[in-house]
Image (tube, rainbow over all chains, first blue to last red; front, side, top):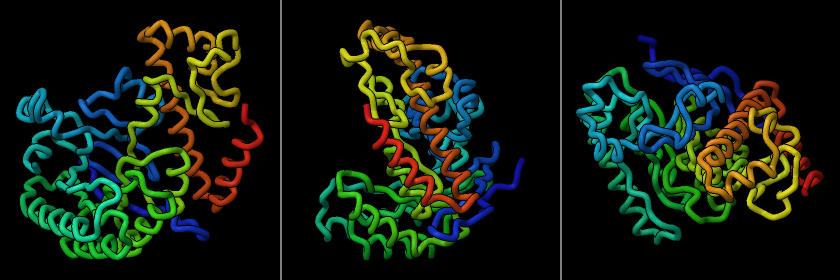
Length: 85
Length: 242
């Protein structure tokens, strides 16, 4: 497992902007980053290969939706969706 | 709630927050931020997994002093990252920026900042300039499903009759597979015929636009030319209006 946390790599002198890396248990996300929304553990209409191909490193899921269906215990048994939220 | 997110195995878990509608009264906003902060503390205490990041959520509606207070309280509790919730809910851009700045000023430089549910391409540019590291929004995907396409010269509603015989790509300077292979006329036909492929291609194009924007922003920050990037973004929109 990777060490997780946040590393600021570079700051912009003229603003508050910075370029950083967010280290998670499953990989590194280059930031500033935009997360596509996949509430039900799917970005509607796209595969995970599509998302990787587009260059996204993290998506947002909705824990409440997944708790209702298919259920967090089931997902835990299957190994988890690797999502934020 | 934390247990659910730990079972799900999310890489980043969020605390529970109370998000108010705009415009929220100051006393209601204060009550919501106190409740959110209490939930944040309980969430932090309920943590079992050490391989998961936990972000606290700053509330406080559009009141800069409440945002600052909420941020200070969360930093005292201590999180791996800090999210800004309940912004971009209908307030003016200037109002949102003031609330955002007030919170960011109290957050540590060493932790990620996540502006939840934001936003438009313009919001992403401003957010990055104001120190935001993460964003999420349904806009590129939902707009794709309703036929709105993002381009370097603004938004296009693909069902419009003007595109019926338009053989050009959605955005002439876009390098996505949709713009390389399909015409506006074909995308319009797919949309009007309610074909599945239309939704898929629109979503791919819009997400490519957002991914490219973020790559451009990261490069601009690295090169210290964010102001120039922003000026070019707006200049292109004005000169290329169709």
